[in-house]
Length: 231
Image (cartoon, rainbow, N blue to C red; front, side, top):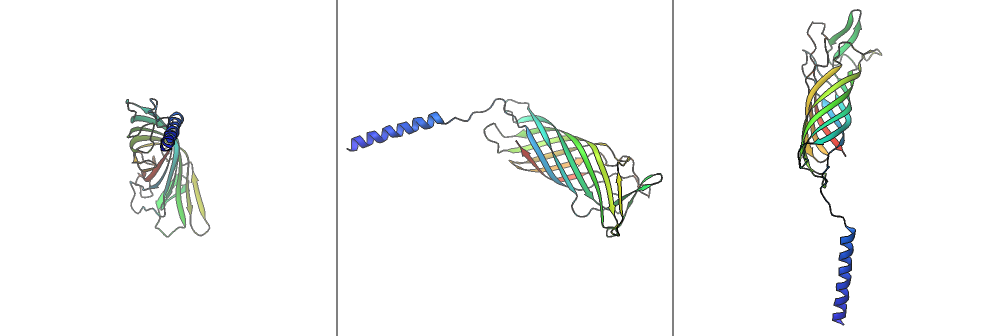
């Protein structure tokens, strides 16, 4: 009886083993593997080149989203170049007031507490170009990455809005003194979904704007935050 039982068990075991081998598909490396990705960022915008008396308050938000086309440049496909297209939004909350004057816009810095709200809202189309290093492959999508890039941005909308707190609101749109095209460098690094992101604008936001004192505005963006990649 024991011999019959062991023989039957062995036959069943062999059948199960054959079934697993037939049904399972072994993972293999894709020779055309690439990391085409959608991306989104959330950052805090820390302004650089600040004039005397300038300050920010609350949280100056930076958001962006877009798509990057991955182009591997080595056999393992862990080094690549990526070119993309995206959109970015900035809401800079500060004490730089913009008003319309008879000879053009007027710029001045007010003391904090002398107004209710004041912000500069900027919308851009952006073209990022980056060099990529990662230790990924086509089988596992959890990996370390370091991406360094350069970004060209074209302004599609701008608005400076001042609210005095006494019911008065001033809005200035399509400021001729803004730089419509700006550029800067950035880096992202991290593991899997969570990645640190930093961008430094090499072009001032304003092209030819001066304070009432005569000093030229040289405000530049410095963004720190997180970037998320989605396959």
